Image (cartoon, rainbow, N blue to C red; front, side, top):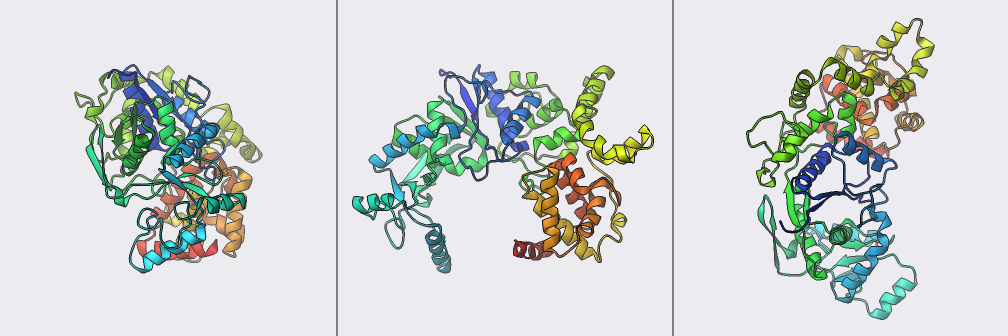
Amino acid sequence: MNKSIRVRFAPSPTGPLHIGGVRTALFNYLFAKKHGGTFVLRIEDTDQKRFVTGAEDYITNALNWCNIPFDEGPGKDGDFGPYRQSERKHLYKQYVDLLIENNKAYYAFDTAEALDLERKNHEAKGKTFIYNWHNRTRGRLVNSLVLSKEEVAEQSANGEDYVVRFLAPQDETLELTDLIRGTIAIDTNTIDDKVLFKSDCMPTYHLANVVDAHRMGITHVIRGEEWVTSAPKQKLRYHYFGWDMPELCHLPLLRNPDKSKLSKRKNPTSILHYERMGFLPEALVNYLGRMGWSMPDEREKFSLEEMQAAFDIDRVSLGGPIFDVEKLKWLNGTWLREDFDAQTLKERLKSWLWNDETLDKILPHAQGRMDVMSDFIPMSAYLLSGEVAVTAEAFDGTADSQEELLKRLQFVLWRLEAQQDWERGALFAALKGLADTLELKPKVLFAPLFVAISGKSSAYSIPDSMSILGPDLTRARLRNAISVLGGVSKKAAKRLEKEYAALA
């Protein structure tokens, strides 16, 4: 490797950092440090509709907690900033214009309704609608490939919304090399004309990713395998701009023990959850290092420094690594017993739990119920724990039937999976809104929630408790309660999904 190595981790600020994202960041960090390179954090915030306030802080705090800090990024300006795509949007227009001038992109004025109609017409014929050479100049699609220059100018002058689409070629085979997958080939006839520039003058991932990688001097792109299909399309854009494409490495996705994709619908996936549960960052990073990679001597327990010294991208395997929380607990326990003396553990415990931030959240609720200070522990224990013991019997009397009980818990879980604002007031509004929709008094809806959240029939207020616990722990306890009650079958889930969708 003759060039100075530069890698990037490019998360979107749409919520807490996913555990799979931390693994990706870790492998980028290790590769950079192994080769004396630079680890860049770039915030891909072009999708303003999904932007979550505070998410960038979640990302940087998570990386720092894991001891995998970035070298360049927001707040650590280098020569390639700014490092937020929203602050770079003035750069992208020139490249869109260049593609249009070279007949590699075009304006499209299709409305959402028109595109939806095209999809339905194709579905009626048993086909899948792809916006590309098959139909870009036929039918009801409206773009600069079928309009005259005068008509395009008139559309723009009238304030018609438009996007800029990439002109994908026809009847070609694109090939590129992946560091661990070898040659990847794709038929261009299957590629759609991706939107590069939106009507809000923000670039999409498909443009910004390529421009930023080039301008930031990125030499290697290490990311999840969900981007494999995007790679050939990106190669086209590099080619059209006359740029060298970075070397690629697509990491296998993390899997559950049942081999299903690791997702927040099934498991807590936020790094904040594992911090809140009391896992050690050393153990978590150790475990993530084993997700698709192994030490040359195959040992299971090793430090970040040992990992860095031994890291070799060629040792990454393609098999989907299994993220097993029980295995993580075992490894975490090994770290606690073997690497911590009493003083160190005491300090970690104080910083993790017995700190001002945690106490400040709980004490206002506890103080009015305490007669002696020892009351604090039993009445607040569920807020200080990672998991709580819940039995099916504890839910007796909280609903008229098992079916109705499961329905309410599932609806609450779905509502909270979509909840971004986790402040007490916002949570109360969301839950009350659901209760009103179901024509229930809030206290009726809350009854089983007390049990699911605290393991008891009464506790501090539900919105307050949820706010203190945070989204991942709250959702995890609801999933556990549903499981304890026998779970929701696939057939029942489909029925409930329809019923829930009708409430919106």
